[in-house]
Image 1 (cartoon, helix red, strand yellow):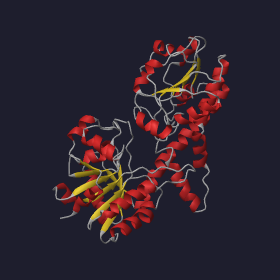
Image 2 (image 1 turned 90 degrees about the vertical axis):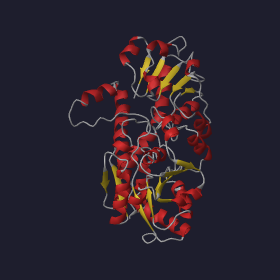
Image 3 (image 1 turned 135 degrees about the horizontal axis):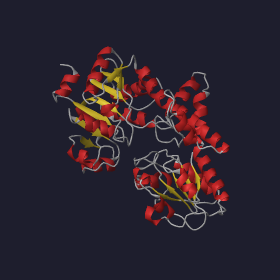
Length: 436
């Protein structure tokens, strides 16, 4: 009987190492079919899961209450499992070089608790070669086991889109790979238990790693093009959104939009690819050019706010500015690598300390990572400028009367980063309205 059959027959268990926005939904999905151990170093997070609370808002409290996942912060529990999935973040350092410490740490912990006959699948986004060249030596060192003899490895890049209730684990084709045909078959069959959209069997682990890292690099470059167009059209006095709507009537026009590119995928993954390329003697031109544009958009928004304050005859220094939204994307509590912080920091250079409201954000995380404390949206009054930065559903429901109430007397400066509002309505009302 192979490992897949033992999992289905509840004779062996699957473990999930890393229970964040990616790992936790995977654990919950598998627990509907097989026995699952969910491990995370964060004991506080584990305590919340054990008490039926979903801090990520990815599956909801009810699903956490009803799941059969064995949540634990005790690494020794991993010895009970034979099929392991590692889903930890892979951020970048301040100098934009890959920070592999989370995946290396996870490999160390898993290696200490690895048993013969195991299959280890990595989901973390990395540059081609990390799974085999970085993770495997750690697993071997810590376990005393030999890869290919005592345990096997695979790679299946995560494609979960945090905050997205349509494109979920079950509905997105899953790329799978394995070190050999036997492992590939096992990994594919295990994921087919939960992925309704099916799996795609990649030729090799490196191919699967490369496929993932270019998915987000491609999106990053396309958004960078839109951001550059936005900068150009704003100088021309042309509304970028109107241009894109017109161009979008052609069947093969790619519908991307300008915006702040943060988070732990699109704003990070391209640097993994360019780092590896640099090591091989090739300096990226298109990928890094796109990254530079996107990394500068927070500063560009802040500078546009200043220019519009001046146009509205508002005093810049100590101007009262409110920012609505702080997370890296809409309808998601995650503030990691948010580019809204770039707006905040740039405004401070002009002597402006904005107030920030975000009812969706993880306030404890924002305080810990950035020293930011949110205000209640109902407390925002007497503003010189308001920056609508994130397209949370709660913000899309704001009407003009509510937005009027945010401002003091005089000309209102409104920056609608995501283009949520009707431009003509606000310009007709006398607003100094601006958007990307």
